[in-house]
Every structure is written in structure tokens, then in C-alpha cells.
Amino acid sequence: MGRFIGGKIGSIISFSPEGTATSAVYDMNDQYRAKRLDGWVPPPVVPVSATGGTTNTPGNGYKYHTFTGSGTFTVTSGSGVVDVVLVAGGGGAGPGYNAGAGGGGVVHHAAFDVLAQAYTVTIGGGGSSPNYNGSDSTFGGMTAKGGGGGTQYYGPAGKSGGSGGGAEGTETNPGGAATQPGVNAPFTPSPYFNQYGNAGGTGDTGGAYSASGGGGAGGAGSPSGPGPGSGGTGGPGQPFSGFEYPIVGLSPLTPQANSPTNNHYGAGGGGWGYSQQNSGNRPTGGGGLGGYTPGGSALQEGLDGVGGGAGNMYYVSSPNKGGDGVCIIRYTT
Image (spheres, rainbow, N blue to C red):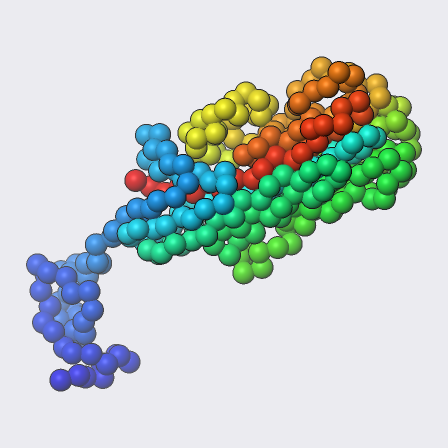
């Protein structure tokens, strides 16, 4: 017969230290006995098992699911927490005298609760030329915002985005604002949840014939100038330990992403600069190279899989596309 005990209705059972009841009500004597004998044994934990994306088990205690295109992450059994890095598409830039685009916004949730069900994953594409913003990526109610596009010659302020696009250098306009830190209201910043995006570089009349760099997840884009023809560099991507490109299945990015630790995401693109001959590398983490190079350079395109913003070179009209985003989910094996 049911009893009202301790604010709950249930049936009294006898305590057994050899077995575990997953749902029961003990009387007061057995509650005392169980506590003394350390008999409160929790139900067995069923580890997470899931399908979806490209999977990798590199031997570091984790299984990775990497989505470079939209799909479904399906937890087939178990429940618990997963570690998620979500990156939006980077902004596009150019052609002509243009500022660099912002990198895709980045969201990191180190303890996202999952149950045995399907979760939709949307991967944002990189923005195209001329100067379109990148598209958003989503997972589990979280949104990574697409990077802001570049700005044309004598254009207005830089475009807002996950990380903001840069401003053109012939006027003192501000760089585009970073929108990523202001989204995902149901999630609050904590040791387990953070999001990353920074503003684009400002324009500077002292830097005529040049433009600023787009913001990156790890830092703001640099302004144009201070000397004539000196374009700004894109802001760096944000590094994530444990999400190195080779172990998550993005090994073709090494060393093209110009990440010394092989784990930067969401870099901004560089702005054009008349005096720059582009002998350098991409902004740290896959942003496009900016400057001035007759003859062309594919390095100005934002890198796919890390949400890099496009850079801009005056004499190279194409490609000016931002890099596509990514979603990487890992859990203990």
C-alpha cells in the first residue's frame, strides 16, 4: 500500500545492501541502516554512444564527431555531457579596394547535457564576394554567428558579425561590431560555456590606399596604417586544446591554417595594402591574406572547416569567399 513519506508517495521496501533499487521508499530504520553501511548505490552509468558526422577515436580517451556540413548527431544510448566547439562561416570580401572580413563566431560548451535522441547540426557557409556575411551554425539551441563581410572603398563602417569586418582605410570609420558575445541568452558564461568574437579594425586616413583587417575569435582586427599603403591584418582565431586539426579529422589544414598549435578557429581576414607584397602567412587560424599581389593568390580565401574570414588583395578579384564553419563534438570513451 502506498505511503506518504518524506513528501513523496511510494511503497516501502526493505533495504538490501546486495542490490540496488532504482526507485523506492525506505522506512526510517532502513534509511539509517543504509547510510551507516554506505548502501546508497547510484544506478549504473551508461556511457554516451552516438553516430553522425565524421568520427575519430585518436586514443586520447575521447571520441570525436566532426561536421563540416549540416547533419544529425544521434545519441543512440546513454546520457551525459559532451564537449562542443561550434564555428560559423567567415565573412566574404572584395573585390577591389576592400577591408578584410570577420571570422565566424565561435561557441564552446564543455559540458553540454545530451540524452538518447537526435540533435540537428547546421553548418554555416562562408560569405561570398562582394562582402557578404557568413552564415550561422547551430547545435542544441546554441548559435554561432556568421562573420561580418568586408567593406568597399570609401565605404561606411565595417559590417557587424560574429566577429566584425574591417573598415576601409581612407576614412576614420569604426570596424564592425562583434555580435557573438551577445547571443545565446539561455546559456550564461561559465567555466563550461564561453563564446568568442571580436571587432574589425578601424579605418585611418593616415593609411590611405589600404584597409583594416577583420576581427577574429581570438582578437580584434588591426587598423590600416599607420603608414600609407599598410593594410591591417586579420585578428587571430581562438585556440582550443584537445581540438587539434589532426585528431578531429581536419588534418589537411596543417600547416595551411598557420596555427602554431594546430587548433585555432575563427580567424579574421587581412585588408588590402598598396605597399604589401604578401610574402607573409595567413592570419593565425585560417583567415585570408590581405595586401597587393599582381598575378593572384588563393591565400586570400578564408579556410574551410575553421570559419576563416576572407582577406582582400586589390589585383585578385577571386576567390574572396569566407571559410565554411564546423561543429566538433567529443565525449569520453
